[in-house]
Amino acid sequence: MLHNVNNRPVNIFRVRSKNLEITDASARGHLWPITSIVAVCVLAVTGRIVFKFDESKMPVAAVEFLKKERLSGNMFNEDEFGDYLIYAAWPEYKVFFDGRSDIYGET
View 1: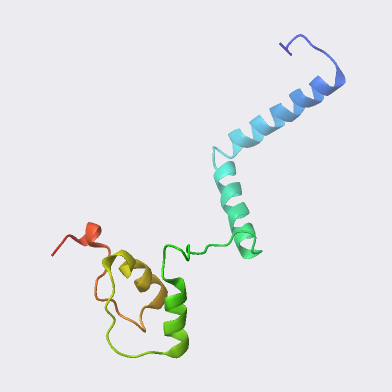
View 2: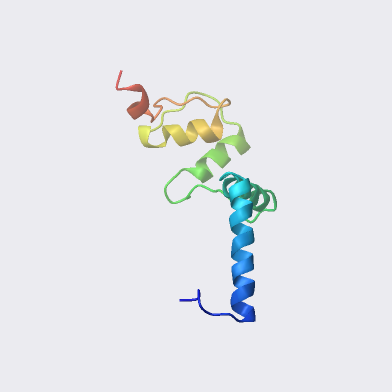
């Protein structure tokens, strides 16, 4: 449709499109993945991307309490939260049920 149109905005668009095509070809497909990784890193470092666990599904407050009060002794937990507890409280606290039995098997 725009192949036969010859005006300034369309010509600017054609030149811009050709430049992007040349840049992408010279990067051999690496430009956009690298740009995406750099963008995510910048957003994470500047605090615009924040990772948090959902407190309604994971015992986030309980782990914060454990760490604050430095409770000692053995922990008995449900297997549903074992993987989170390993992530959030290890090595100070060891879990009873790992919760990752789908990886390791039942034994």
